Structures are given as C-alpha cells and as structure tokens.
Image (cartoon, rainbow, N blue to C red):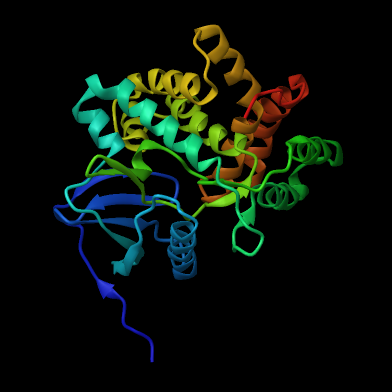
Length: 301
C-alpha cells in the first residue's frame, strides 16, 4: 500500500520566484511549496527530499520537506516555514538591505563550503555529473571539442566540500532572522568554485542575457535585475575577502569559463533547448573561447 499523494491548488498563492526546475509559492503563513515543472518525475522530487534530509544530518541549515504533493500534473515539496520570506522577496521589498543580505548570503555559502562530506554519505561528485553530461553531448561535438571540455572539468582540483548546487536568493528563506535553504536537490561534493560559478550565473550571466526580456529576468531573480550586479559585487568581495572592483572583476573572469559551461549544462538538463542548438550557440561561441583563454583556477578558496 502506498500513501496517496495530497492534491493542492496554488490559485491565489503568492509566487515567490521560479527557476530552472519549477516555481516556489507561499501556500499560507506557515508553509511554502516548491512546485516542479510538469516534466519533472516523482522520482526526482523524492530524491530532492532525501537530499534535504542527508544535508540536515550533515549540519546544513536546510528546511526539511514534510510532504510531497501534487498540483494538476506537477509534483511539489512542501516546507514548513513560519513567518518566513525568501531573501529575494526581502531584496524586492527592501532594496536598502541589499548589502546586508548579500553579505549574509556570502558568509552562509562560505560556511557551507567548509563542510567536508564523509565518504559514507550519498552525495554525487559534481565533476562526475558534468563529465557525464559532456559525454552525452558527444553526438553533436567533435572529438577535439569534447576533449577540451573534459580536460577543463578535470583541471578543477578535487575536493569533498559540500556543494549546494543552486545557491541563490530564491532558494534561501529567512526565518527568525536565520537563513534556511529550501532547494537542496542539486547538492553534491566537489571544489567550492562550482557553487560560486552558480552564484555568478544567477547574478552576472542571467541578468545580461540579451534574449531574455525583463519580466523573465525578474521572475528568475525574484527582484529588479538592476540589483543583480551589486549583489554579486558584495558576495564576491565577502567570499574572497577582497576590496576593489578590479579584484572582483579578476575573480569574475577566472570563474567565467565554468559559469558559461553551466549555461549549456542547465539548458540541456532542464529541457529548455536541444543539444544541437547548445553546441552551436553556447559551447562553440561562449564556452570554448573562454576555456581557451583560461590559465588555471589560481584562486584562494
């Protein structure tokens, strides 16, 4: 006997933000729901719920999902969050708090990236995930192109550091003035640069994509896209303990090849594009040129 999945409706619920895999709604004063896209299977949702539990046992400040639900043809996870708002929501409502909230996000990420994942815990290696994806692109890439991507991924130092996988202000709730993570499905282990590259993707790359209209950018971020570069500046300078804009720019350029690779990876993984289109318009035009100029990580993590 399997427990019947509870049916819910999000009609009239406030949309807190959306991302590659779904949308987050505030159901009521006590709960939020992450509603996955229609093509996301139940097994994926159950996997994210299990990842959240593993992360909690590891000491990660994550809210445990207590329920898997269904809304129409979509599955979702419900989190108990009393009087909580996302960081993105707070930025949108109180722009004067940008520096404070960006600083707190950076410090939280820095603490997460100090946690070592034991070998007996069921987290994947981020490098293995990216290499598996790269190999799946083999039919649309030349042997030389594929080798350059694999060599680039392999050149990133090995670590067993905990990685959130999608660290951004929509996936962080503020409850009783404490930051709680609500989206842990992409958790893995590896070098901290993988997490920092995803932060860059959210606050540097996405807001400047010419093919995205302002409404779409705002939906992905959860606030005015004009704030994004300031958030990255504060987070980068805090995470790496640097001061000047020149230092932030240098770090940004160092991480850019991996961030560009994530654009291609996410577009395929979420089904937003085809391998043929991504190979031609992202990998050949953006990823490979930045990899060619890359001379190693060379950053102090």
